[in-house]
Length: 193
Image (cartoon, rainbow, N blue to C red; front, side):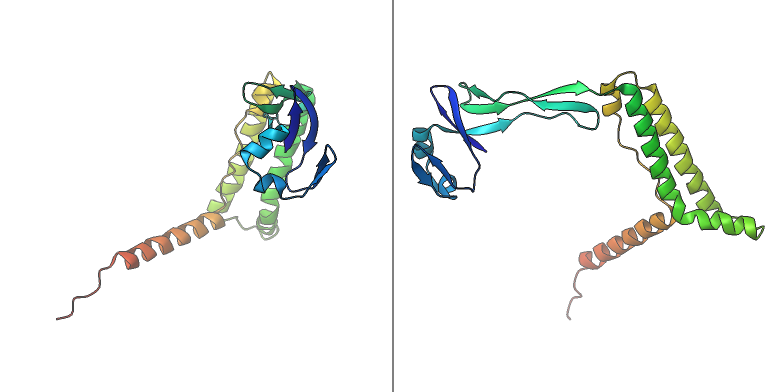
């Protein structure tokens, strides 16, 4: 995005790759890409620089009035972030954690149902993994509940859900293939006698 600035006043905005008209002159879509810096300066065409935005999951974000920055010769657009209600965010975050844990465990619920119906058992590695998902969810909800500000909540690290035994087997198989490939690449050709 660009802006035309004259005497410190923002006249208009120009989207790169689109045609536009200024002072009665029609400019083709490729004009900005093909113009020289001197041609852009002559028009007063400057970059529009967007500041960082807060995460809209946690903050109400509004765009500030664009401002011409004479020091950098840019039009700066910044944002104001107003925290949302902490208690509501905590409830939403806990519900999301529960939903994610449920979604992760659902494909293996049949193992538990089968074990109950047949008076059998679930394989220990799957039982351990299923418990680790529940533990991760419990710890994550506790971390959410411990937050006293929206900033703390917004800065919680992403949850690292434990990989299932099946995923671990796939990772191990891939690593074995990588080691095997490295061994083949590292072999020196046999010497001809």
